[in-house]
Structures are given as structure tokens and as C-alpha cells.
Length: 488
Image (cartoon, rainbow, N blue to C red; front, side):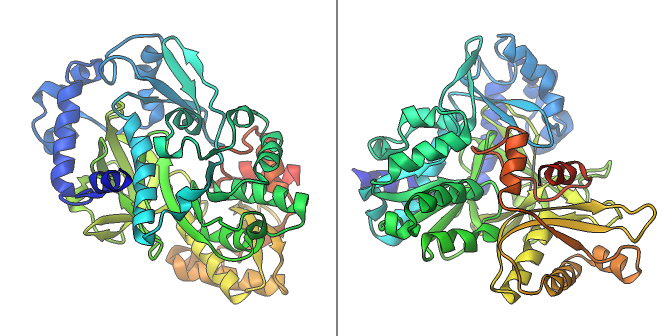
């Protein structure tokens, strides 16, 4: 039975992506042509991609607000036929609350992509080992509220109501524990509940997995592998895993397999389908039509939108989606690069709103992460817990520079040399930053080390501790840095 499911889900899944994408756009437009959005944007007259671009402009969430508010009032056939089944309620550290529709047509994308990832892993390992014990995903509460007829909750909580049948008796934690709202209390209860279980797979955002491991280690004084000897796989997403890897593996006791995912409330877009390579296979037949805008053009008035057939390897793109949940030419806010076009595989490089260009350098998250990783390889005693970066503009004394707030588990033996090496690595990755340093417009970066749990305390102070929430890696102003320093 399981083998049949493997074959049916995996067979031809990544072939003919361009044909699939063309058909998806056609089906999306046809199904929504009688909706309010479809009438407003002449869906009846859209016959091809060129027509679609002409009639449907790129929008961010705020520009969809008018349509979303009508749905919240109970009006049907606004963005998609009928009403959504759910609203995924989401809020970042830099924006307000969003209500992302999930329909009966789109829910399968969120569920089946996880299945495919696990099946691909099992197939590659030629073993059902991970299904022989317990599986746990650290998630938000499954308790749902309502707006009229529409259920509302965090995406991870919504997905809890659609567990794959083959995991239902293997799932941790219990519902009683999972509904606890206070994250620290919840992690404590999860640790107590799972200590004697045969945990084999754990999923979640890396800092919260680390927090769970720390609680277990404090309770037992043991390495995680001594508590869970059959733990085999970490499924992670939300942030770049590399900066957290050393700390996690140190706590576990040795390296284990890891798989990255690229989910959001708007859709599950890609996952790592092999442990040998860390890029992610794009889900091209999952009810989502993809467009891309080169980040070189992103902030210009003449944005050039392209579809999948026109993408190139190595270009930093903003990802634009149209979905069977009723999002149309929706600016996701994430940036990606293609590593392969046969099949289509990507890496996530950051967020369109997360960058530093206070002085014209336009440094992105990918460059920040790479610079730190290269530096840590040289100072191999160093273990980083968490970090963020922002500009420090000096008006009177000294030169402006980038300020790095870093919480170390193990500090480099020579912090000043570490700082110099980090700056040199960033200069190599970003020519604009190099020029600003060379021309002495900026001084080299400065690191401020933070006390233990500084970032946890910051997330707690803004009521974003746990779940799908994550610390912004990079900012173009000092708002987040000042908040973190206030809590340090």
C-alpha cells in the first residue's frame, strides 16, 4: 500500500514542468472568471500569459486588503469561488496581522508537499526506519477561531487538522500539550511528554528545535542522541539552517540527516528532495503559478515579470505567485535563486524587505549568512546561537558602519580578528560594500556580543516566541536592533 502511494505521488512529479505551469494558469483563470476579482481584471478576455500580465498587476498583501476584508464580512466569490475554508493568520516582526485564504482546493498543497518530501527521503534511504517510531513537528496551537464561517489559525495549527493517515498514531506532541499557548510552558510540557518516546523525526524552525533540545539537556544532562538513539532526521524551514547547524549537532552529539522546506501561509513551494544537495525542488504541479522579477528590476518602475520558462540560474529573483486559494500575481516577499532548470531547483536567498542599503550597499540576507559561515569555518571553535545586522549611522563621532548583534554559544578566541575576517568576507561577496569600505565612506563592521537568551527575550517581548516566528536576520534601520539591545 505504502509503495503504491510512493509511486503515485512521485511518478512524473517533476517532468514537464512548463506544460504543467501553462495548464495551471489556464485552469486558475477559468475557475475564477466569475469571481469579483476575475470580473475586475477581465479574466474572460485573458487567453495567454501576455494578457495576464496586462490585466493583473503585481500586488502585495496590503493591496489585497480590500478583497480580503469583503471575505471576512462573509461575501462569497471574491478571490476564489465560494468562501475559503480557512484563514491562515500570520504576522511578522516588521508588519501587521495578515489573513491568508486557504481553500478546499489549496489545502492539499500544504499537506501533500510534506508527504512527498518524506516519501522521497524514505525512497532514497531504501528504509522505513523513520516511520518505525514517533514524528514531531514543533508548531503553533491547533486551536482555531472563527470569522463567520471561516476557521482562523496559524498555518501550522491548521495543518495539524490534516495529518497524513500514516502518521496519525506516530505524531507528537499530544493535542493537550500542543494547545498550550505560552511557548516556554509548551516546550517544557513537550520535553516531559517526549522523554521516554522513540522520536525519529523532528521538524520546525531551527532556533525552536534548539530550545527544545536545551530543555531536554538541562533536564537529563545527556546528549540528545542518548535520549533519542533512533533520531534520524530534522526537517527545517523558515531560516537558513547553516548558522544553527553546529550548535544543534553539538547538542545532539553527532550529525544527523536534515531536509529543508520552503513553506508559507500562501503555499508550500519547495523542499529538499535529497540529502546530498541542499537545493530545493520547486513544486510546479501543486495549484500554484509562478512568476519572477529580477531583484535588479524589483524597485524600478519598469518591473519585468517572467514565467518559469525564462528563468536563469544564479539570478536573484523576487517570487510572485497566483494560487488556487485566490491570490493573484501576489508578491510573496521572498527571494530565490535557481540552481538548476532540469529539474527546477532553488535556494531561498532572503526577503525583499530584508536588506541593508543605508549607504547604497544593498546587502542581502544570503551575503550576511555566507560571510558569517566562511568566518566560522576559519575560527572553527566558534558556535553562533543567533544574530542580526543593521546600520549604525554616526552623526558626530566616528564613521558609520554595520552593527552585528551576535549571541555566541562559544566565542572566537580572538573576537577582533574574527570581526576583521567577517568584514573581509562580506567585502568579497558585495562589491558595493567593498567600495564603501575602500573609499572610507564606512568603517568596517562592529560586533556587539549579547548575553545568553537575548534573542529569546526579544521575541518574547514582542509576543513572537515560538511557532513559525523567526528573528529578522537583517534590517535597513535600527528599530529591531534597538529593541534587542533594550532587552539585553
